[in-house]
Image: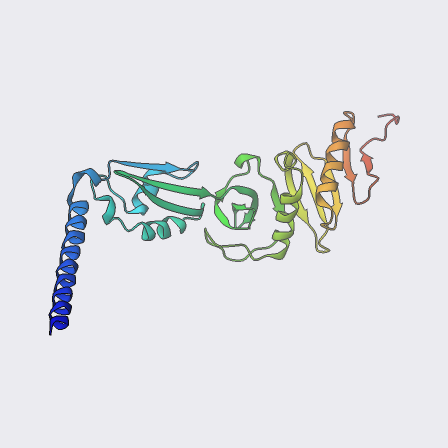
Length: 248
């Protein structure tokens, strides 16, 4: 009997402890949800370059003065990630009263002719927004035909990816000097500088090496008008409009 009574007392004691713990947790949660200390007083945005701050804050669902624990940050991340210019979005709490929105923006890599204008696409072929011919000195991808497309969708034309692969693998200082990247029906690639010099790359192989060779030739040539530089082999061939030494 003594053992049974001892067990009953222990069970009763554990039950009381459990009730007390639940009440303590509930009280703590209540204080956290009601205390003005945890009201959002600041919203920080990290990584924004082209996106509107107001749009990011609105899509996040976070509002100043609201309790920091009552925010559904996951839903806000999903909404922001749907923006065509956003590659990744994260929303975090910085206690006691700050919410941090971190975005990774997609960067335009080229222009694509589309309908009666142009669109900007990133290195993965994602349609970002409408573009202009003078948009950030972006090269135009030609020789491709694309179907109906909406912002945020990825281009499906195979030759587009060939051109983007070339742009991605060229020396980083070269794409900004290009006006056009053309892919023909044999999947051979020609690039054109802003000055109108054609670079014949041939098949999309050893692109970085060919790009470096192209740049090297550009730095060595004189001011004679050049039609093209053929860099399909290790020995570039330069075609002048007027061969050096000829009378004009």
